[in-house]
Image (tube, rainbow, N blue to C red; front, side, top):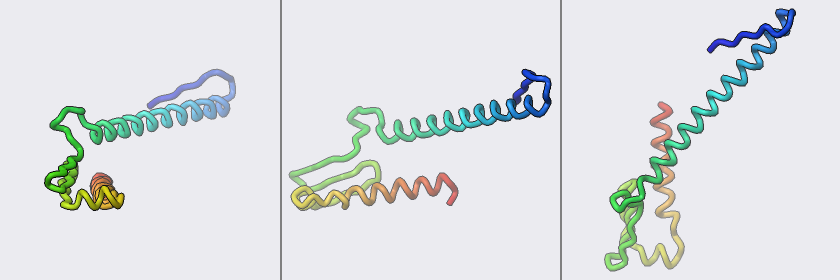
Length: 107
C-alpha cells in the first residue's frame, strides 16, 4: 500500500497528510474485511432456506426436539415448551459456537 502527497512545499506537512490518508485507507481495508467475515458467518448460520437446511425439529408425537446444527436431541419437548426452558436448547448452541470461534482463533 503506497501513499504519496506533494500538495505543499513542506516535507513535514506532506508526510503528515500522507499518513492521514494511509491511516484512512488501512482502516477502510480492515472494516471491509470485518464486514466480509461477518456477512460470511451470517450466511453460514442462516443457510439456504431449503428443507434440507433445517435448523430445529419439534416432534410432538415423539416428545422430541432436535437441533440439527449441533446434533442435539432432547426427549422432553412438552416440559421445555410448558415451562419455557429454552436455555436447555440455547446454551449448548452458544457453547458450540464459542468453541468453534476459539478453534478458529487458535486458542
